[in-house]
Image: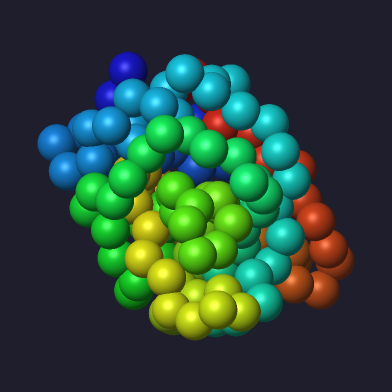
Length: 137
């Protein structure tokens, strides 16, 4: 499986796994599929939504990590100085938490309907948490 479908609020996106750059993160996330949760708007990172995962230990380290993802470059922060989380950027982002700047593993890239990411982000900001499902393409 090279791609997955992400349904978030009323929007649907196709995302490509970044297997060559983040093989361990991609493999671990595939074991979680289908993955259903809710996204909320970030507090410190800028124009992004996130899924807080608390102290969940996925047994991952850093790979293909960045603090400055582009819109549609989905990150998984494996935990450490802040809680484990998934970040879904829709605009300008400097990934951070209350303890400072973070770097997360870029493991998925949205490859279609990017124009709907800011719409989803603003909807999440002003209307609250939205359902999100990561499932097989």
